[in-house]
Length: 103
Length: 113
Image (cartoon, each protein chain N blue to C red):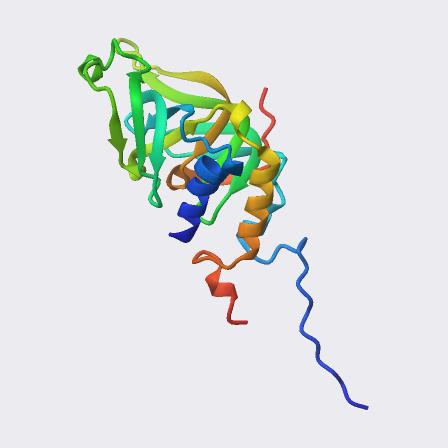
């Protein structure tokens, strides 16, 4: 009896490399953490190997930590911006994940 | 760099022959300067030429008032805000899936198995 070895057929749904995880998020809302204490939540429409992305219905959260000059208390201020369609340059991307629910 | 080109080409140019060239976009730079203008051209590095520009916060950046058109080096761009009505999202998704299948530099290490 001869044993045949088959190379596994290409399974498009399989996660073989990290970017496949991003591919499976196409057309889903995702969370993107960016350099400069910025976070985005939006629906992913396109990406490439650089993690350049096109997102729609985007909410951007910018976190700024200010130090009160008298009390030296840290005041965390968040600023929110929205845009309907946004191209994001990949070099600012730190991580991509399903959206994190925060109150 | 092929994917860069794909990206701008597909996102901002082919984008279904309803090219985004000629549309108004807002380019936000890494130094927080945001410039709105008519997209004139884009290249493989994501360098962008804008015509008829206006700085979004011109009280903060008054020195840009006299500038009417500009070339922006791709590497200093953080975001480009696009007109949603001009973007065919189905087409973009197809393009992204096709791009994911073709091995790029990022995926090349998986090729030799």
